[in-house]
Picture 1 (cartoon, rainbow, N blue to C red):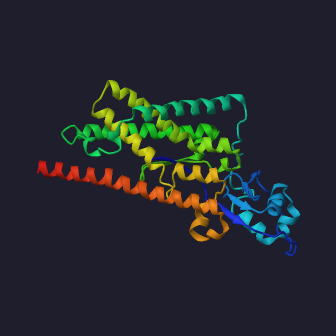
Picture 2 (cartoon, rainbow, N blue to C red; picture 1 turned 90 degrees about the vertical axis):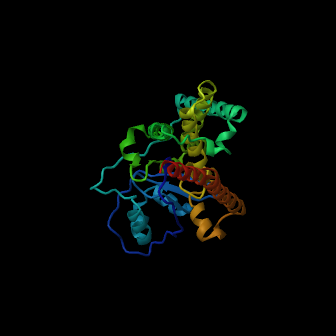
Picture 3 (cartoon, rainbow, N blue to C red; picture 1 turned 120 degrees about the vertical axis):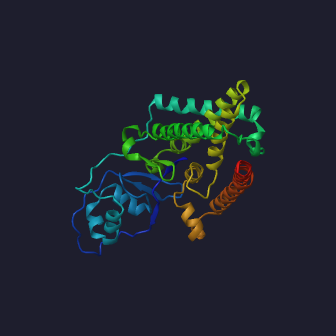
Length: 323
């Protein structure tokens, strides 16, 4: 399963007070930042943790005011512990910048158009058997092992495509070795998109949604192919893509859908604050996140009752018939 990843954001409400003794001089990395809707700032640096700070702290860090940073012991320690200071033992890399050239903008628009057409195609001609009739999707006979191998190969290939789209639209191709994490044990792949939090709203939403958009495009292509070749292989491949897309709407998990909603609401800490301190959230944020969590739970129940349980039941019957 492919998805994006971000480091946990942290909120710091530190007053700049020159009441500490001078700390050792510090050298800050290049800071990427953006003012949020609520007036607070997002700060990020290469290999650092995402921080949310008030305006006073943000300006001190952005301007690299070493005098105030080194005199404020608490601020100095937080920047140090969260990776904002240059460490001579680690290689320093610049963060991918938000592309603003016409070619990149045309690429974004092209993906949106293809995605829109794909959604329209699925709404008009999408097969209902993917939603309700999962019992009939997998043919449990002697062909099952071959179909499983085909499904696994297809899943790996489309996962790579999914993550590659994140890399392209987050301007991360040059850092593919460092930004792409693959876990064979969990059968997952992750692309770090934390840096796009400091981008404009359109570009960061495109970066986080590019994976699921290409998944929907692939599903629509399979739908068209299915009109000509309606067989078990095509059905299995469509099922894989359909389930991957549905999985992304589990907003209570680390999915593309969750990060899309966080970026749309412009609050990297909304999940943490919703669980620990809802008083700092607006009524709109609380309502939006509550609805998202309910949708996520409904998705879990849907997958359980319409996919997992029927397939387990059919597997048991198939094994029982072979004994």
